[in-house]
Image 1 (cartoon, rainbow, N blue to C red):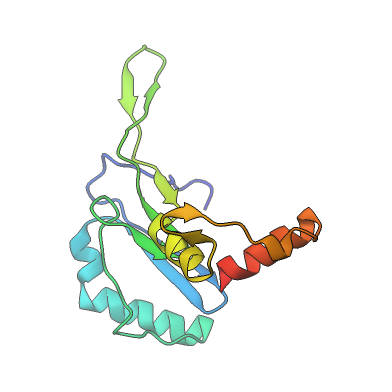
Image 2: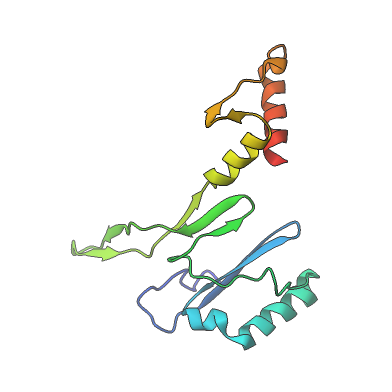
Length: 151
């Protein structure tokens, strides 16, 4: 495994499949052409792997196939997409080479704002204090606030 390159953005035949699982949430990433991800044979292979190795079922309604360069994906409360800025590296001759785009993690601000509004932390677009919590220690306030945020 250590001799395999982690990425080769200039090789048109380079393919890589990775998955992330946390509790009953999981995500599969395919580094390669978008057509490979949409290929029904690949979906069947992934479904078989999930059932046999991870004991998970593929829900066809929740299955989303997208390109991270175009759209973001919500996974475990984070928006995941591709960075828009490409970084450069220099090789020994001083020629810059382009690095592949990195993953970018963002907080879903509209979702967080909606939760805080429904829990009365935001009123009329402005923060609203919880005076009942003022007698608590800062650690207790943080615990209460996080419990509201988690739902």
